[in-house]
Image (tube, rainbow, N blue to C red; front, side):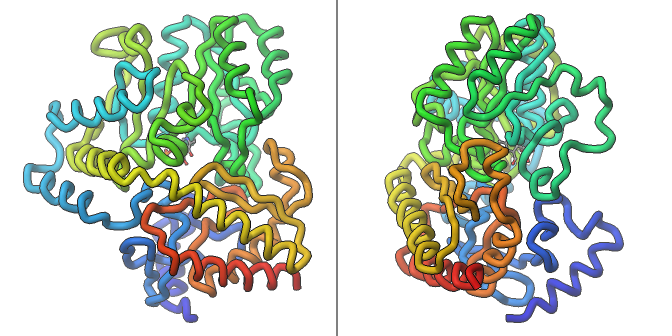
Length: 428
Ligand code: PLP
């Protein structure tokens, strides 16, 4: 397998791009080697600039849930393109996508579309503060909520991958109202509530996806909701990753919990830049132009992104791939465990429907601290052997693998063969 063209582009790209990437998670810092440059993608496969084809388990970090270039989505995008790209005024499709989204999440009467998950979350925090008149927020260690100042504390994703605890350039004042709790640990939340009277919101990834996949323990989310309610604190579910991913109504549907504010992104744009935040009427009516909480965007509700999002969600509804996701996910999970046993490798696998993570550890992974017991050098070996055997994974221990509804039995066979070889390399 040659990566010559990727290597050339990597060298060339460094002149005018920072590290030749536009998002640090795309750098191969934690697995070694150079990042691959991609030429194209179709269905379950992605092809690099050297012509190497891979089964894609990155799926652009989640959005491409139907696989690449789904026919119906592409048709909708082409149709929208003919009408113009952006108008700075409202369109019919914004209303259509808003209805699909609000119907899927019972806690949402109204939604505001923005252009990224980061924007959705930072706006949701502002809204929670506007609604409650309080300033502090609680976030969980290892949860990533985008790169806004107040949330770049104890964050997962690229910060975990690159072992950066926070970020330079964030003023102390910007994080002084951010309190950190431990995932799956209600006591750590209670302590903050006892010590601070002015907590506006608790924000959580209802299934952790940015410290690797971490599942909420039985009752954790419901108890968190009760605790928040009893103390007049809003619960914000950051479902940027989990929304529409393993259930149409996201993790909230799966765990039967209703957040006060929900943040979405990724899948709702079907590959185009969209984020959203939504809540019941009384909360959303705080947002301008109805209320005094200001938030705006030149490209918010962009017509092409709306068309792509509508087509993606309608197709998801029609395909209803969630049962299939569970079956395939379970098969990959079992295969990972079986081959780890065969080669005597310590491995724990966490899975939430179509999001999976193997951790090279013998410890149960229930929070950020236990996720960090994974041997990341083993992951690096595993990653490259998967690449050599035609499976594209996120280049980090702490990023989830994603499944698409297009995955076939043949793809599954190829993934399992690659896992066997990769596990063998780790052992040896
Ligand atoms: N929230 C969660 C849970 C995410 O996983 C991400 C991105 O991965 C974000 C927020 C930020 O979204 P974006 O990268 O679109 O700004």
